[in-house]
Length: 402
Image 1 (cartoon, rainbow, N blue to C red):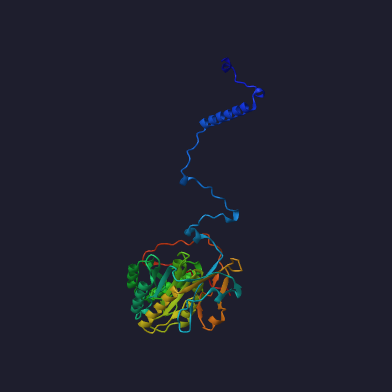
Image 2: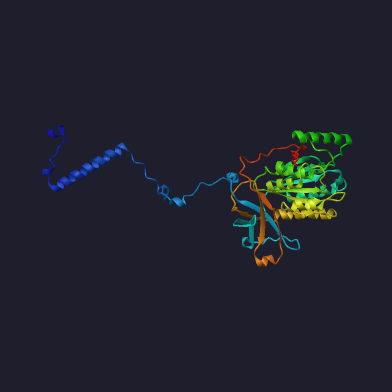
């Protein structure tokens, strides 16, 4: 049959309807088979492996990527965090307060509480600051014994850190912040009373100080002198400030409070502690009379307490109470209505508004305010220091012109 040698053509009009239908179906199957040869079909997935389409959620329900914990520490927020303790008239710690029992104020303006919780497990960053002037000669052995007990009962390896700092005219690091109890014990054992300066050394020091007032330079402190406020300032700004944000910072000061040689005033030391979100616990101890008022002021203004033990048993008790306060705290946070970061001091007040709780006459301990600092360009850099390194000594403030 010759028609196969010619182009295949059919006059559809002359075909019967049923035959026409069969022809069209045959052509359709032939076309589908040709396409299948050009693009092989993927083998079907087993039933349990077949993908199920995931419906796209509405725009307001799309989940954000999970944030890393380290990144969260770097996020700048406007929350003000205040840690506080509550004790009754018998000095027992109260741990049952609720958010609705309290109201917080900033510069006497009521603030809305964003977060309220008990904080019993925050990591600790502690600096034990030991006065080694001659006024501590007889009491230093008891101070060291109590410090040993405190380290063993408070520091949790892998979580908490402490530093041992001795001071007279300078603040000297006996041991930098560490969680190694053995290193801390060795550092406490190494603390010794500083030798008093000779008359000749005193004269040279006085001449250097006069020259520094003119040039703005600095020099080392005088051995055997007592510069308490300078040591607290250096500890807060140089040692505790670079520690992680989510840590409880505290200075434990062992001294008679009789400052004679600091370049800075007590107010500057308080400002440095508050600016570092730290607290001072003072233990008034020494061979002579001590300045109770000064020790109470620097402690209470930063949210801590001052203790004045009469013997070794009371000294150990003071360390025990400090431990309890550090472990039995509340955290209250709020976003201030005044959003300005203008370096001004903002006074904080916490009132008990529940009438039934108020009848218990509880005493709340917390820092009395904060400085509204602009956001830091970069977090402070933590430096590793070798034993006997000295913390930065503050410059003497310029004299006010009359």
